[in-house]
Length: 114
Length: 115
Image (cartoon, rainbow over all chains, first blue to last red; front, top):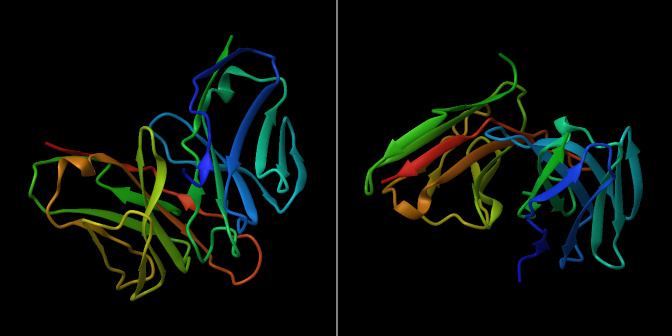
């Protein structure tokens, strides 16, 4: 079993809908939880990160971490066609991706229909 | 330009040939990383480096060699390319502070095809 599980999709929703993206993980040592967005033929770009459990909001995006369930989520409100991309969850231990590499999920391909 | 760059962006080679992928960053970040991205696997860490002349293996290091003689460069070499190494390769860098969050910044990727 892979350390981080993420449904690859594709996930197709109409414009304006609320999108929910999720990952589960098995390694209790993970402390930092990140969501990256990747447009086609581009490198991943950080959307948000969360340390330990809790919620974090940034505009239309909300990240949630439940360490007791080993489950993380990203919610996108009022989704726009420009949100169409692949969303990658990533996790790391002590240094938040500094002194160690990131462990990624497979990524979920999201399509927002105009 | 500032940031992290990779070259070449696209490469086609043949089985058995040696290929070197280049990565350059202008932030003077301590840490640099190489990942490969494949359908069905996501991004997987190949090698990383904490500083010049310090490198370590990641999840999938077999068939790859790295070096880091200068802080800003981190080349990845496939000594004898195989078809299974057909992939998109991403370089990343981070400050590597001992405490707190360290964002990893990714390059644009190199799309490698091994025939």
